[in-house]
Length: 150
Image (cartoon, one colour):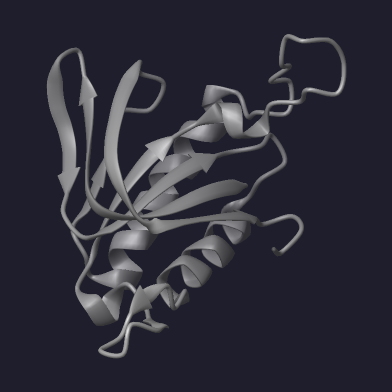
């Protein structure tokens, strides 16, 4: 499981011209699920995401976590995070999980994130054509992969 985390001042996701999710200060989490992923992958990423000290304290040092700043999270499914560009110019998505595997793990990720954080988690719609808007604060962008634990 891979995620891209972007610290944001505000973000929203639209589907079919309608706002589906919207947050102010917090994190946009782009979530890519691989065919071999399990709930333990989600659990590791959730714990790391909520513990990351990437928000500024009173001295301007990145020293605070999302719960400490009362931030919000917008989770967007993104199968393209598992694109392989090794051969040719057209990416292969063969490592991305099929919907029958990905949807339950996507839902588990969201529900566990809510349960672990107590926050109102906003989302896009799995598999939909989405337009994501955000103001990346910093910019701060972090990549994590549960298989590599980095």
